[in-house]
Length: 162
Image 1 (tube, rainbow, N blue to C red):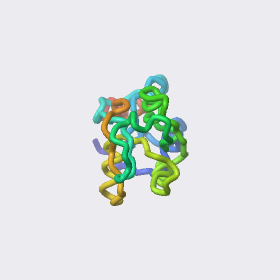
Image 2 (tube, rainbow, N blue to C red; image 1 turned 90 degrees about the horizontal axis):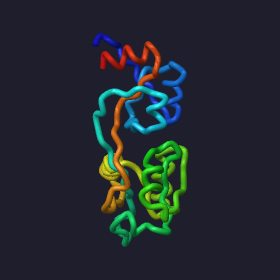
Image 3 (spheres, rainbow, N blue to C red; image 1 turned 135 degrees about the horizontal axis):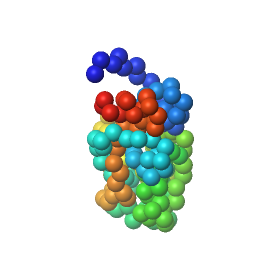
Image 4 (spheres, rainbow, N blue to C red; image 1 turned 45 degrees about the vertical axis):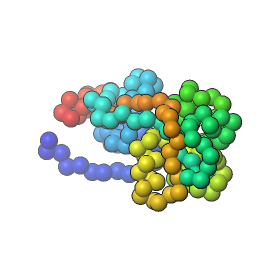
């Protein structure tokens, strides 16, 4: 397309803020198309569908999401997985953290019974970090993933090109 791409890294919320402020053109970080975001952004054609799942310690007795009823699960503050899990099973208690590393650390330290994220993210972190975790059976929700763009002339131009 002729663009010279400049990659910007940061916490999830700050990336969306950068898009809002016109500092970046899009966010390639598993951005879910939610009703709230669809009011604010236009989206590319979805390129992935993610499933909300829960990881637990490998030696725990939990087999399914519902086995965590009354237990505490860590999650991210800006994550659509939080809403998916609340809607799927309101009996699970949620402990919210600002960053993904923090809610993973809570499970590693034994402060929570599980961590909620997308199944792909959980599988990847278990494999890459060698965590002694497993993902329980069940899916708390699915969501389409796409690139978000500002609803202005610049955002529409880039969206059309992509």
